[in-house]
Image 1 (spheres, rainbow, N blue to C red):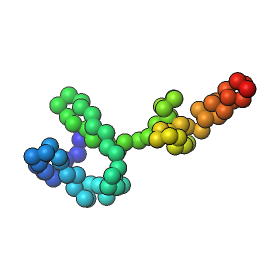
Image 2: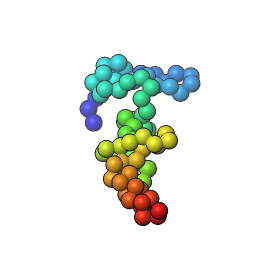
Image 3: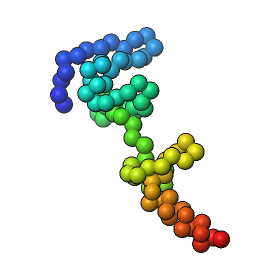
Image 4: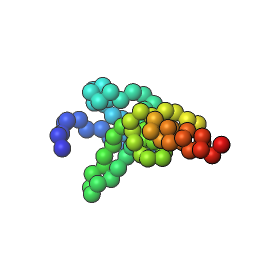
Length: 85
């Protein structure tokens, strides 16, 4: 792990501000979802990546009713629907 030398305090609501320089370096926009993980004594924060609700892939995603489906699963759903008719 690389130290940045930046120290921030948690406010009384439990919030921690990610410095602008770090947000810019990693391309983090305001309102972007972030995931929080715990690994031993470390708290890991990373950008949330959307995944297909069916197979977990993050490639070729298409939004559908607030969820995401990859193109492969979309094709399988379409084939299944055609067979059911």
